[in-house]
Amino acid sequence: MRGTLTLTWILIICLSQVAVQGQYYSKTRPYHPRPVKVTNLQFFMHETAGITAVQVAQANITSNDNNSSVPFASLVAFTDPLRTGSEPDSKVIGNIQGIALLSRMNASSTQYIDFGFNTGRSNGSSISVFSRGEPGFAVVGGRGEFMMAFKILSLCTYGLKKEVE
Image (tube, rainbow, N blue to C red; front, top):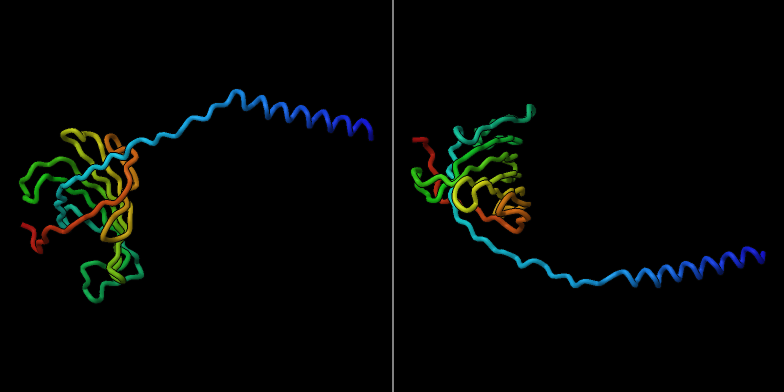
């Protein structure tokens, strides 16, 4: 009994010394976060249904009885040029690649999009987006100049053409 009590007191004294001596070697450094860099980009995606966006899969149990332009549970893959202007002959600054899961049930879609830039200051950089539907898409990261990117990407429809020229 007496030996156990002595051993307990020795352990308590040793452990208290470790805690006291351990603080001697530690420093508290203040946290200085990096300043947030805001980048506003404006570019145009030229998508042509059936040419740059094609349906790659659809569930077997669904049908397109009402001739909807978006069948239920469609998986669409797309690759489109990224341009500086809305004109078809404007300068190409990169490309967009992605996949979208579409549903006519509630006109929603879940999309993964990668905006890759291959000219200018952002050469080799990209922005990755993964989100569900409009009006904004969640930016989940990036590469190169856009590393650790976050926030929201807003897409606006500039114009629609029914026929392919």
